[in-house]
Image (cartoon, rainbow, N blue to C red; front, side, top):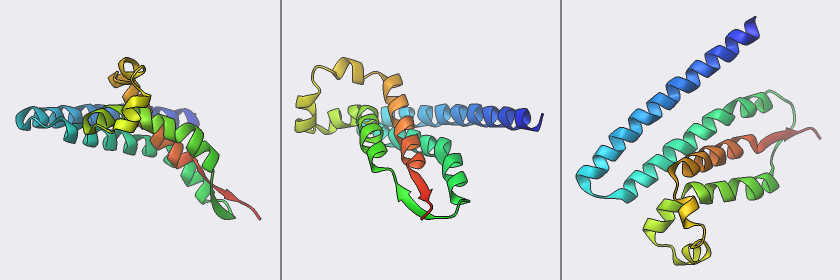
Length: 139
């Protein structure tokens, strides 16, 4: 029973966090409309989503912190999962900043990568991957 209450509390916390993020996004978008600068919106949105992903992965980091051993970073996980999801999540920012090398590589993927849900998932997942890539190795 205690485990179910913990899961319900986590689900409610996630719901409240998502509602708060939605509210922050509305404030940021209204600010962008008043200033006419979309780049700041993409930076802030991406940062908030990345931090939310890190918060989701914090439990794994917390469990590892209690173990004995030396901290290690799973570099393969960061490169294979983290970098692509970070790229997908920050595609609109890359597009507006006009990074030519990256845009030439992604012209065919632009309609897919400009979807806001895909970017949302990419930024949250990259934050999650970052936090879960740390582990302790017993020597």
